[in-house]
Image (cartoon, rainbow, N blue to C red; front, top):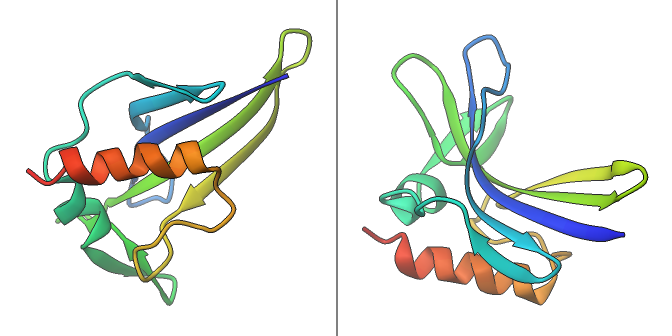
Length: 119
């Protein structure tokens, strides 16, 4: 059994469907592998910005055509026999902090995104 994490930007269209996420960082068995560049202005757009959705404050932004842009961390547990057996999504808390149940190596990768995603 292995654990795979993806750092991604979800775009939810005006109909409420999530489009293909922009995956920019992956962690396989505790090792960070970059898939793409950390988004420009990551901190400004996805950590410091907020929008209201269904009565709750979320981190990210709402575009002019009402698409929701939000940072998420996807955790997948898989085996060679069963494939993906479990999938969990984690989002920033309304105050911009990470959920407490994430392992230290995921938190460290997020801190790297904060450092490199300032511009």
